Structure formats: structure tokens, C-alpha cells
Length: 215
Image 1 (tube, one colour):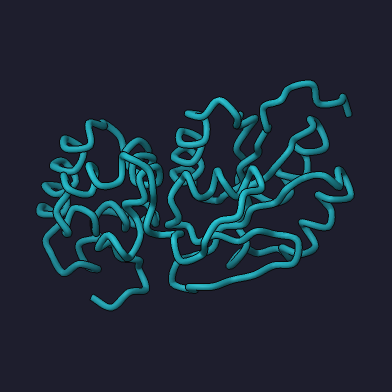
Image 2: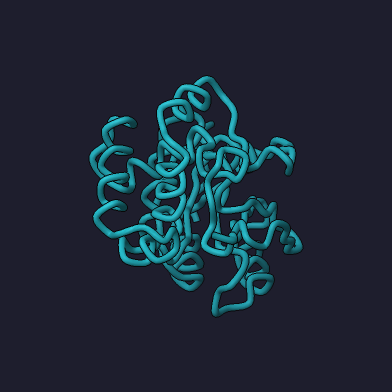
């Protein structure tokens, strides 16, 4: 492998959800100190990408995957022992740990994930609160129902699944989604989720829900 020459930390993102990958890429690419080299869907793809090009950190699914996460991390560290691994897990688990991995709930703010990637300490109790000047402004623009729809979109649910989950009609889901897009100034689900991740809108403290929360 060729040596690293940039002060920018290079990151690879692995997640089976294309929406999550694209949204996290948007968030992390906004800063000057992180560069997303690629996004992949499987553990094998992640290993191949790390073997092809040096990276400083990886973001990986750390729960509910059809492969051994600890073994995957071991193989990554065998490629480069300096790789920092940040794992994501469903917020319904509340807590999760894997040896050698800084684990964060999937509804953590993008700033929290970025901080973990760069090796900063992140308070677990702040994972779903978000921080930064954009949080309060964005939260104030959205109703609680719109926050719920945003959270469920970020979890990969379809309109019909969100309708069933929230016990509202599919037409109402679409209406709330379009209102949310307009308020956030976005035109796609990935951009909406990126705004939610950036400002911490997806957490329980802001009125959002996960698929496992009671209705």
C-alpha cells in the first residue's frame, strides 16, 4: 500500500442501507478534516477497499449483520493496525459494544460520529441530542410528527411501513414528508437524513422514534 500523505483523515463507510451511506457521506464530507474515500455495502467489500487503498478510519455496522464483526475488525487491523473503527448499531439496542470499536447508535448526530472518527471522546448520553448551532433552528422548524417521519425514513422504512408504524394514512405520510423537505430546504431523502444527522434531529430527545419504539 502507498503511504498516507495528507493531513485529512480518509474514511470508508460500510452499511447495507444505501440511504444511510449517502447521508453519512454528505455529512462527513462537509468538514475539511475528513474525506470519504468510498462507501460499500458488505464486510467483504470493506476489506477489499481497505486492501486497495490506505484509510485512516472505517464506519461499519456493528450489530445485526450476517458476519462476525469482531473477526472483520481483526482482519481490518491485520491490513493496517492504525485503522480506527467506528461502529453503528440500531438505537433500539440503547447500548452495544465490540472490542476495538467505538460504537455509536445510528441516530447519533453526524458531528458525534465525526468526532468519534477523529478519536475525540463523545459522551454517550449526547449521542441522540445533537449539538452545534444548527440543531435548535432545525428542530424548531419541524413538528413532532415530521421528526418521527424523518427518523423512520432514516431507518429505511417505506411510506406504507411508516403509515402502519405511525397509524396514519400513506397520504398523510407523504404530506408530512413534503412539508419536512420544504422546511429543511432539501429535495431528496438522503439530503433530509443528512440534515437530521448533522443537527441531531433523529434522536429520542428531539421527539424522534425508532421502529422498535412503542407507538
